[in-house]
Image 1: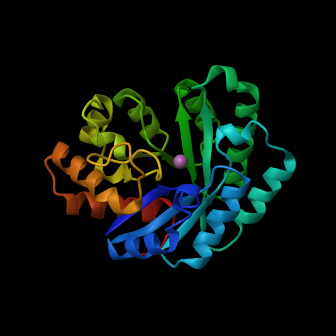
Image 2: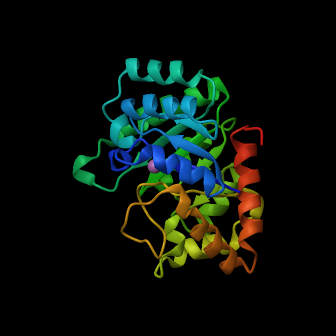
Length: 255
Ligand code: NI
């Protein structure tokens, strides 16, 4: 079985066949699955998906895009939902400087810290989104030494990976590792310690080869395990088992 640690199954691209897909995910041996929120609607949807499906768990939080416009009311909503059963993390939260003209750095940093402080208080792990913001993200993580979590869709160098690991975090790899030109992700797959590695789809985004460019879903995650196994000279079964074990440990989920 494989643990898909990052999905957006509430996305409108699943509107037409969500129920059928949920059955297929279970049948494909992908369990559990983490439903990760990115904004207010996503928080409600993730909690609902977890309530309705035994193999789904939820993370609640605001992605930096949405966090830029956050209010105290939004933070209170996250705190309220975080106390529901099967909510196992705060996320996805972090910094995204990819589109400078749309980026409000002070607001992103403020609400990232506030959500980190909430995770600290609630003793929940965090799911971190960091894009073109490595130094600032690491600075915030260092401010919260009691918080641990995962660097989702890790796109950093092996040097950054070592820093992240030293802070107690895990690194998650997804479809990108299967892309031909993804030299850095392949390097990370080769040298990450097996007890700190997670796998994820980030569906509907980032479908692995040979489905690149199409809608992604959790049933495709075996391509990620297969690629990591090939890069490490290991078996897909061992990668699946180890990354699942890691995810259960990090998110405090009973097998
Ligand atoms: Ni995501």
